[in-house]
Image (tube, rainbow, N blue to C red; front, side, top):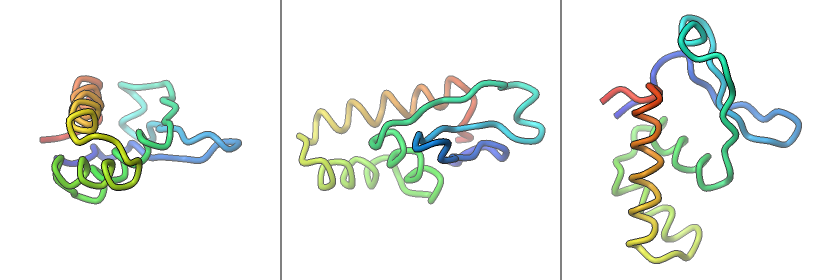
Length: 88
């Protein structure tokens, strides 16, 4: 799994957002605001981590139950795929 070229995370006035650049902006012209967990998941995918590695990080970083982390990470990644941000 990999973030498609052209989608970048930026800090805009203290808010973490995903914006499209270049050719990616032809299909997506908005911004997506990420909370801390969303940013961690996005960065995990961007750095090549597996879904399981991201889940492990979320569990340790946020002291959350593994099942809850698993559900949240899977939903977020599925949403990213549906929106066309991720290549499999």
